[in-house]
Image 1: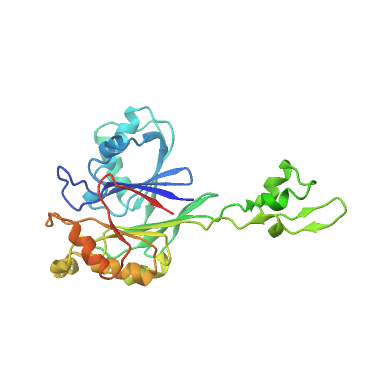
Image 2: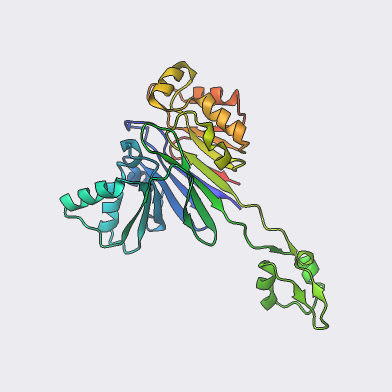
Amino acid sequence: MSLKLTILGCHSATPRVNANPTAQLLEIKNHSFLIDCGEGTQVQLRKYNVKFSKIKHVFISHLHGDHFYGLIGLISTFRLLNREAELHIYAPKGLKEIITLQLKASNSWTQYPLLFHELCSKKSELIFEDKKVEVHTIPLDHRIYTNGFLFKEKLGERKLNMGAICKIPEIKICDYQNLKIGRDFVLQNGTILQNKTLTLNPEKPISYAFCSDTSYYPEIIPTIKNVNCLYHETTFLEDRADLATKTKHATAQQAASIAKQAKVKKLIIGHYSGRYKNIEGFKTESKIIFKNTQLAETGKVFKIE
């Protein structure tokens, strides 16, 4: 199994010609989750051939413009495209009021259901769940109320051990689903064949943690422990550690320290300050502490396995 993560934007503050603000698309278990929605996100979605109709859930980390100013444009475009499906938005309290005012002032009410799930808890909470996926908040430490998001696959069905099954003529194709969900098989003579003798363990679920703007905040470690992949902001290098502290952002080495302590498998860093013309320095500094570091770059696709 694998997840697909497309970086639509990974730079901080003001958008530039080749530097889009934060937005990501996570494809997991037939869901296309949009994570943050900085300016120009809908153009980036078009650029990378993402079907708008697939997006039914949007997760906004906090109400700084470079993380949500693209949302009203996307909502309006959905309206122009005659969208009918619901759009769920998970965001800090206050976003509903902002979007509603914009729609009211422009007399552009959506003809599709626009459903807001406003967040205010400072503790991690489950905010989305279906049979295959669950999403939890990751409370962060920034200048305003901010959450990251933890996306986790649920444990899947067991896999059929066809080598063992083929030796039992009584087992028919119609019995396969019961085996997949863990049931034993009862032979006609009453003998019970334990499920584990006929199936194999399911693949381990995959998890992805998105940590938006935040200072160095070790309190998140228990929530993101052992995730397959962590995205953590790295606005500054160590030469501006004082500014990171002042603005409640993180450095590359601080992100690496979090990844190491949480024992994550892969670290992706981004949200680079425009002060830096070459982002390779972020990777260099992070790798001092955490070797498996990769740079977020606009348009880059990561397979999380």
